[in-house]
Length: 478
Image (cartoon, rainbow, N blue to C red; front, side, top):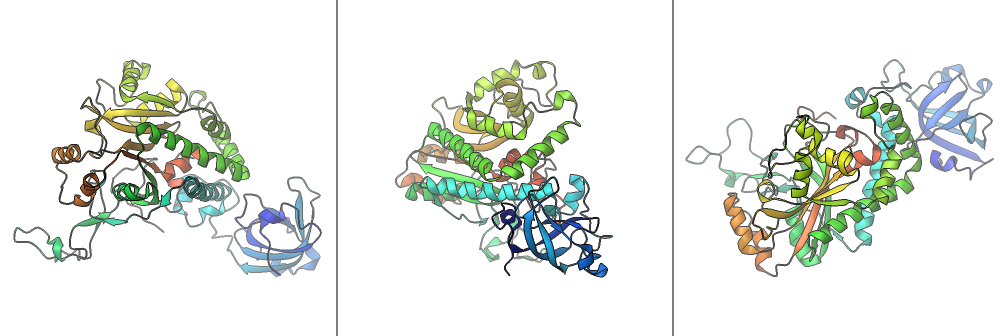
C-alpha cells in the first residue's frame, strides 16, 4: 500500500480509511503515542499504538529519530492539539536510532549546536520550516521571472573575469600546489599551461555574462551559486551563496527600481500564501526570542507583520546625498554612537547606517540611488555631474542591503575610460566591450543575495541558518 504524506493525511480526506504513513519519530510518549513527521509539513501526525498488539522489543526500537512505517485507520482525534490521528494496526521500524547517541533530542537546542550538526538539524521544527520556506521562495523567484517574460540563463561558475573588481576570489587550477607548477622566466606561474590556458576563478557574479544575453533576448535572469573569498566571520556573510541577477535591455534606473520592488513583493506574497504553517511557527519562534531581549532592542513588529508591511508600503526612494545629510544630522552620529562616523559626502555606507535609515528614520524599506562613482563598480552609468553613478541599493529592516543594482554604462568610450582609471584589462573583457560596440542600448539590472531574502522572510538573524550547509572561513564541514 502506497504511503500518504503527513500533510495530506492532516487534511482529513482519507478519514476512516486504512492508510500507510512513513516518517521519523519526533517523540514516543507512554509507549502509546508516536509523533511522526515526514518533512511534508511542520505538523506531526499522532499514531496511537495499542500496547497489547505489539511486542515490547519492537516498541523499544521506536525511539526519537528512528524511521518507521505505520499502517492503520485515520480517525478524528479525541485528544487536544490534533484533528486526526492513526489508530495503528501494523508497525515496522525501517531504521533504528540509538537514543544515547542521536543528537537531536526533543528539547531546545542552541543554533550553534545545530550548526555543528547541520546534517541533522533539518529534522527540527525550526530548520524544517526554514528549508521549506527557502524551497518555496526559490520556486517563487523562477515563477515571477517566467511569468514576466524573462529567460533563465546559466552563467559560468568558472570564469576569467572579476565582475565586482573586488579581487576576493577563489582560484581554480589543475596545477599541483606543491610548488612544481610550470613557471615563466621571471618566476611567476605560467598559466598558459593550466587547464584553461589562463588564470581562472569561481564566479563572484553572473552579471557581465547576463548583460550580453539581455542585449539579445531582452530580459534575462540568472539564479545560481556565487563565491567570495572574503574573510568575513559575520552573521551576514557566506563564502558560497546564491544570487538572483536579472538584466533588462532598455530599462533605465527608475524601471530597474520598479522591477526590484515588484519582484520582492511578489515572491514574499507567494511565500506568505504557500507557507502559512511554517511562517506562523517562525513568527512565534521570533516572539519567544524577543522576550529575552531588553525592551529597547525588541522589534516593533512580528515577523508576519513585517512581511505584510513590506507588501503594503511603497519603498521610499532617497538619493545617496539626501541620506548622507540625514545620517550626518542623526543623533547616533552626533553622539558618536556609530562605529563608523559620517563626516563627509563620499563615505561608503555601513550596515549600521543602512539599518538606521530603514529602522529608525524612514521606518520602511528604502531604495538609495545615485551613489558616488568612487565607491561603486566600473560598469555603472556615470551621471552628468561626473561624480555619481546610476546605482541603487535596497535596504531592509534587520538586514541592511538586500539588493544592489544599477543602470549599466552603455557608452563605449565612457566605459573604456572608467576601466583604464581602475586598471581593468580591456583585453580580458574584450567580449563585454563588444556589446557597447554593436547595438548598445540603455540597460539595467540588479543582484539579490538569496540567503538575505530567506533571512528576512524567516526572521532568522544569522545567514548560516538559512542555507543547508554554510561555507564560511575555516569551515567546509559536510
